[in-house]
Each structure stands twice: as C-alpha cells, then as structure tokens.
Length: 353
Image (cartoon, rainbow, N blue to C red):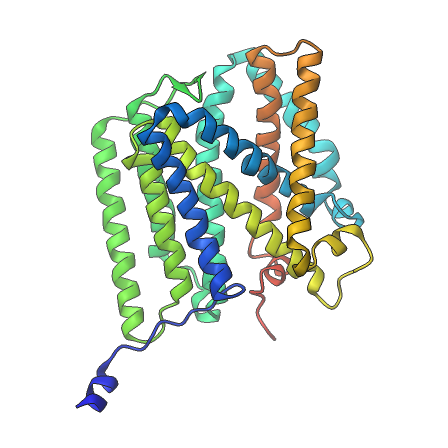
C-alpha cells in the first residue's frame, strides 16, 4: 500500500536556484518581506512614514541608483562599452527634465515619475521572472502567455486602481493622474484574478507532471503579493509606493552584486582591476560598504551643493533628483536585457552548446 501511494504521489518540484537555497529564499522572501513590513509599519503608524522613507532612501534607494554604475563605469571595460550612457546621456536627460519642468510645470516631473517608476518596477520583476525560468532549463525559456499576463496585468490593475483614486499629491508633490472610471478598475481586477488563476492552475498541472520549477513559482508568488499589496490593499498612495519601492531597491542591489560576482568569476574575465577585486564573493561586506559609501557621499555632496548655492526651491531639487532617476531608468532599459548572452552568463543562465 505504501508503495502504491508513493507511486501515485506527484513528483517533487524542481528547485533550480540562482546560487543556493539560502541565498534565493533570502532574495525572494527577504526583499518582499522588508517591503511588506515597510508598508505595514507606515499604514499602521503614519507618523513613522518619514522615518521609514528616509531609511529607504539612504540605505537602499541611493545605493540602488548607484549600483547601476558598478555595471557601467567602475572598470575600464564597462566604461568603454557604456561611454554614451555615462558621459552624454546624463546631459540629455537633464536638458529634457529641465525643459519639461519649465514648459509644463514641476507637477509633470512627479507625474512622469509616478507612472514611469511603476513601469520600471514591473519590467524589473519581469526580468527576474525570466531569469528564474531560464535557470529552470531550456524548456522553461519559452514565452509563456500566462506568465506574461500575471507579470503585467496584476501591476496594471494596481496602477489603474491608484489612478482611479485620483490623488492630488504623491510624496508631497502635486501630480495629475489619468482619469480612470471605477468600471475599468473592476474589469482590470477581474482580468488579474483570472490570469492569476490560470497561471496557478498551469503550475499545478506542471507539478503533477513533474516539471514545476519551484524557485520560479516562489518568485512569481512574491510578485503577485507585493504588487497587489502596494497598489490595491494599501489605500494610501505613499505607503503603497513605499512597499514596492523598498522591495524593488533591495532586489536590485542583490541582483547587481550577483551579476558582478559571476562576471569576474568567468575564466575570460580580467582580474587585475579594482572592480574585479571588490566583486570576489567572500568580499561581499566590503563590496556593499564601498558601494553604499560612494552613493551616500554622492547624494550628500549633491544636496550640500544645492543648499550652498541656495538652490533649494522645490523645482530645482525635483529636477536634480528626477534627472538621476530618469537616467537610471533609461540605462537599465538597455543594460539589463536578459536575452543578451553576456548577461545570461552573468546570471548563470547561459545555454550550453
């Protein structure tokens, strides 16, 4: 009888970790947990919002933006390959940001940020999901419509729901949101529930057939929970945004570290530079301290310079910070395409042969 039960039992899921069970579980659930915790704290005790926001900015946000430059400018090879992004693009973004602010008003910068950061967070999560699918094997690398639907429809429901609330301010800045009727939000909600249900059923079928990718499923569940919580379950626009922002920032920092470590592990990698030395796996405390110190110093000097020059008006400060954010969004859209063979190698998902 025991033999019959064992024969009829569904095969255990296959867990193809990016590094190890401890690392991946920490990455998936750790990043999601601190984001959800930030949202829960601020929603329960609104007076703590500024404190949690400042901690997010200095411990994660600034470091998250700065982490991009470890991939584009911290060694000669990266700087040569990304010279346009590092040298010329900042001026183009600055000029565009100034023009938008002067022609349309400062509210446009906050509004553009409100929607662009939503797309940026969604696209990063899509990339992580694709990394986990590829890590699970070639058969999982194919496009799965139910996965793409979950990745995009759940956040779409979220941003439509938030837009329908029509908040007049976001992070104390004036914004104007799209006029979204409640009926559209209801349709989006139904669509999100349906695609999640279909995707979940497909995972059940995969589990029964012995081909379910466990790590990928765990990540997708974290994606659904974080976006639904940040945009739908938490009513306040700021507290909800903070939930997703903390998750996104922490996730990005860890991903960049992993990509840098794998990059300089490769047999063909040059190991005589500072970035190669810093990206040794055992030097992770030094890596994070150095990156944190550089990004913190940069933002502190920038803020100090603005203050010293008397450029503390809301519009000027907004232009300065949003230029950095927008530049980061543009660069990320080019340098983190998982279909690139070199990047696949840095995440350990390159196809063999």
